[in-house]
Structure formats: C-alpha cells, structure tokens
Length: 64
Image 1: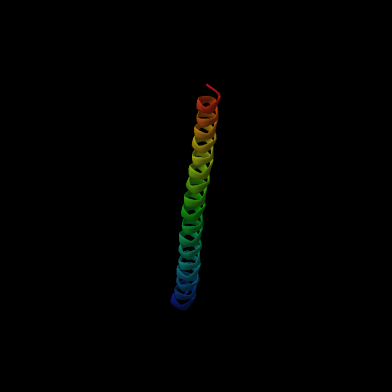
Image 2: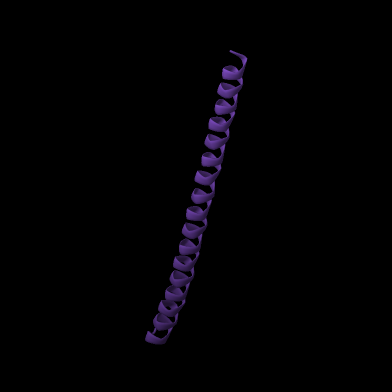
C-alpha cells in the first residue's frame, strides 16, 4: 500500500464517520421528539382521568 492509497482510505473513513455521526444526531433528535410527544400524550390522558373523576364527583354531589 502506498501513501496515496492510505490517504484515500483515510478520507473515505472520515467521510463515513461524518455520515454516521450525522445520522446518529438525527436519530437522537427524533427520539427526543418522540419522548416529548409521549409525555404530552400521558399528560392528556391524566387530564382526561382527572376531568372524568371531577365530573363523577359533581354528579355524585348533585344526587345527594
């Protein structure tokens, strides 16, 4: 192997590394976005349960 071949391989590996790092950053961003959406969904569900319970309590009070 000569020096030019080694340089070419090094350049190719550096480009591949940059692509992989970019993909990893994109994946991490997507994961963070998914977590935010999941937490928002849980919050909506919790709010719905609280609202349902409050409606049930107010109906119970009216019937007393």
